[in-house]
Image (tube, rainbow, N blue to C red; front, top):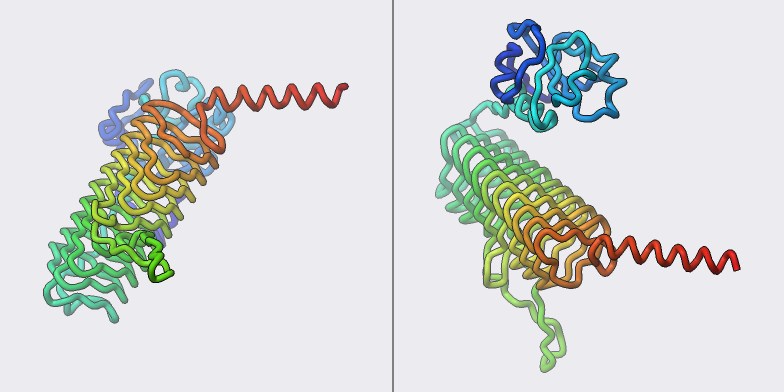
Length: 347
């Protein structure tokens, strides 16, 4: 159950309101005017709470739950808590997320004048701040930066010169944004670094040393993107590094210069994407995947955890292994190797 010291809750809301938000169809004749005060897990709920049931494996927890209302599918309705009002939806987890946004919206107390900024914050005189922007203690907003309405800049964050941040964004504590354009509704968690130099060097045989190649591109991030803690996204060398709308990027991900990441991609923790990779829409890169430079991954492709991608992947293909190969091929090879080792042991 969310701790009220950290999360500001609205409501209560009636069951019929929750049904309207989530396009749910009530099952049975329960009281749709029942007030629901909060969200909870099945195992910790009370009659004031909304829960969801998304799989038969949670049937035991559901049978013991005391929740007042439960989002679930038609197939699982008979396993929902017996005393709750059952709301039938196609995707209970997604519907629960919709309800959670209503119970726990982002409602920062707006600070709109420089004189009201917390101690240690600095805003350059040439920066432009939209209505209801919040700048927290120790944050820096550089020359000619632009911050959209209702955006919150966390403590210690640095918004570099000329950076544009859209509306309704949340920039986490100690984040660093340089040479980038950020869309609306973007969330960066603490420690994110965006727009720093890409890793560009050339060996100068005459001088006998590595010479730095100037990185003259930008990072351009679309709307509704979330970027996890301590993730880094390098700016391009000449072209921009592009992050498509709707992407979800986990903690500790490295995205190198000139990468183009399509829309709605999922990039899980500790993925490393080398320079100039082109990644289509709706691609999933699981944890600790590594991509060699200049690789192209087609739309809807999936790469299993710890895989190393050395070659292009066609649209819709699932791959696995190091080097990555079609997932069925990988498992056939594992099975064949297992048979060989079994024969040797038996002989």
